[in-house]
Each structure stands twice: as structure tokens, then as C-alpha cells.
Image (cartoon, rainbow, N blue to C red; front, side):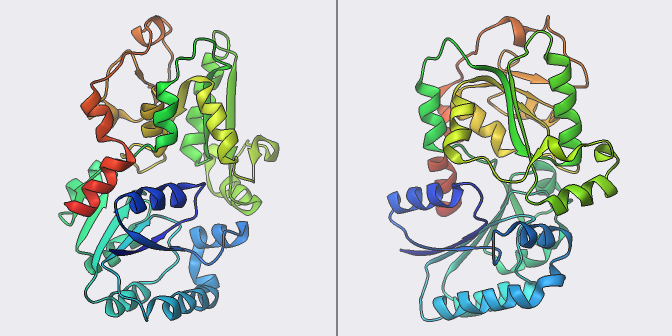
Length: 328
């Protein structure tokens, strides 16, 4: 079985997905959904990709020269706001691979990325991590994100002495930046050991956010990192942290991949996402729903991590996620 995978080169997610697909018997060709991981290119795609249309088109034509002579059984697009390809380009891939099964997974909310709705017609099945998107769009099927074997292995380790009480590693979306800072400030007197890593793909995005978003007006350039944390370092931070901080970005109901990875690593979670109480793994000993205040008398702070049902835990693994998408 031959599979064409198109997705952003984001941390090491393409590699871990390809490895699992190989284990399932798929021969995979992979292409990034944008022409470059250069910070300026990534920022421009998010702001207005028409500015670099000719550059995107040149990259797309290179992909077409490679795949035109091949026949795939599956074309799998995992995407969100990073997607640089136009509607016509997706249509061209469809015409080139008429016998392939086309699958789409959206890991950004349609409210933040409305363009994605225009290309759904090219796909046989479409999935979203966002429950509200699914309720509003009959084309979509609800499927939360996943944790990889790395986090599953973390969950097997019995760590008693944690280096950090709380950690956050992620992109500094305005709403997320605001709430993570609020959590950190309110927690630091009782729990001072914190690791906070706010990331921007480029200084351009920082200055754009500072001008356009009120939450970022007082943000200092030095608060942010402009190089993504390396996988080994990020894994070490997660392993040695007792709890993960999380906040959904504006317009998003779906749980971030950091929440699902925390589930895999068997870490406690503090999140602003109200929809988390509707998931089968929710329990108040492990998950604290943040409403702007921290109550240190809450059971979350008093009780140890509570093991969840094994069947529920396995449901969110990358293995189960891919099986759901490929075999539905």
C-alpha cells in the first residue's frame, strides 16, 4: 500500500507518524505542506500567503513532477493554518491520483482557518479535532489528537522527585499567552519550579501580534523564543514535570496536542478548555479547569495522579488514531 502524506514539518511529528504507518504496512512519501520552514515563509503563510504565491507554486510543481508518475492508494493531508496550497492545487493532486482514497485531518479550528472548508470537497473522509467544527459541518467526523510512543514510555516511568512543578511549551497565541502567564503568576508562590517556553516562528510574528492583539501590547521581545525547542529537550522537560499548563487559542474548542501528550505521559493538566470535562478521560484529580483563579484546596492539588482505564488510555494513542483514520 502506497501513501502520500502531506503535513507540516512540525517538531518530529512527520517522522513518528511515518514510522507508525510503516508498521501498519504503508510505504510513505512525505512532503511538507509549505515550501520552506524558514521563519519568514512560515509567518507570511499565516498572515497572507498570496504574497509568496509564485514561490509556493514553484514548490508545488516540484511535488507534482515527483508524484505524477506514481499511483497512491491513499493521499493523507494533515493540516491547519500552515497549509500553503491553493484550492486549485489540491484539485490537481486529486486529478493526478483518481484511484486514491483522500483523507483530511484538521488540527486547527475552522473558525481560525476558514479556508480549509473550501478543499473538503476533494476528500473522501474529513476529520477534525474540534467538536464544535464537527457539530457545525456535516462533512466532518470528530477525532481528537494523539500521543506518540515517546509519551507512552514517559507514562511508564515512576518518577518521585520532579524537577518542575509545572511546564508550558508552545506557540504564543495571544489568548494562550495571557492565560498561561496568569496561571504561572498565581501558582509561583506555592509552586515556584516552573518551565515556560513561549515560541514564535519569527520576530515578524511577534511584532505583528504586538500591534494587532491587545493581549500582547505589553509583551517584551525577550519573553519569547524564535527557535523551536529541540525534541530531546522538550521530552526531558515533560518527563521531569509534574503538571502541564494549557490554554486553548481563541476560537478553538478542540484539545491541543499538548493535552493529549500529557495524558499519554500521565501528567496532571491545568487548562482553560471547558470542553475537557466532556472527554472520557476527565477526572478532577488529574485535570483542573482554570477559570481565572487557582484554588489550592481543590482535589487536584491534594490528591496524587489517578490512573485511568487502560482501554480509554489506549484510545488516544497514535496507533489507535491512525487505525481510526485509515480503516474507518
